[in-house]
Length: 132
Image (cartoon, rainbow, N blue to C red; front, side, top):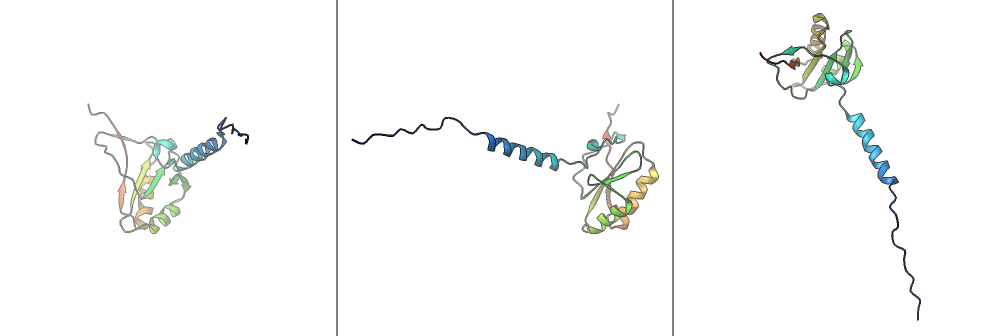
């Protein structure tokens, strides 16, 4: 008679590939996090009782308290804003998030750069204030 060889079967599970996949997913989600959101870049929006939800914009411009500009979460100049606006489509829109302490002149300069680039649909987000 032939002797039967018994397989030991699976004794343990190798979790190293699972950990690798989870770390890759974590990195992807960290990179994909939207840094162009005003709250992500420490911008305090002004408050308004009539504030409404703003839909996703083609161009997201953030003006910080010190006057610096971020376009899509990256530092930019007015020339960069105008160039990005010029690359947009005819129905492009822009979301300009300005800190409460930023000069009005700086917001107008950003709006002007967007209009020179061909973007005329502009939104200025605010925080909802309790109506009393």
